[in-house]
Amino acid sequence: MNSRRVVDGLAGLVAVVVGVALLWQWQANALLRAELAGLRLQGEAAGPLREEHRRLLAAQPSPAALDKLRRDHAAVVQLQGEIARIEAQLAHAAEPAAKK
Image 1 (cartoon, rainbow, N blue to C red):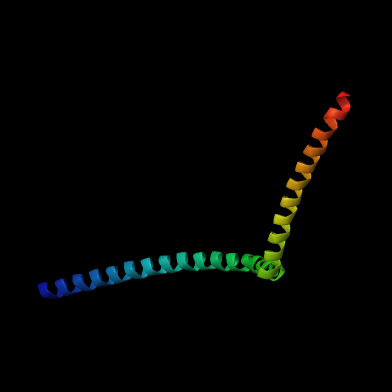
Image 2: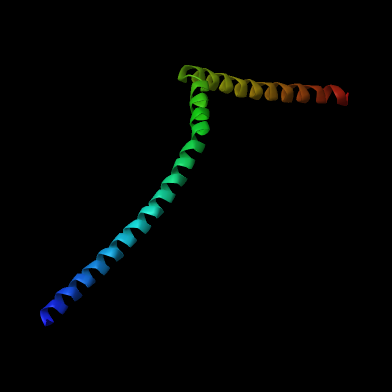
């Protein structure tokens, strides 16, 4: 009789441990499902961003076009410097004529 009680007690303990483990697993599963649903929503929201990224990549100028733009910009800066130098020379040349 005593050994029967021990066996019944152990069986009850195993049942409780298994029940707790199943409950813990069910809760973890519910949390993971909620997280997955949130990630799916984020993935859906990222669709338009991916499309915009593709559009922007397609609209980028080629490396050759960028190189030409850089050369043009450098030429414009150089010409602006020359204009400033010539304007200074003209202003300096006009000073003695204005003093006379």
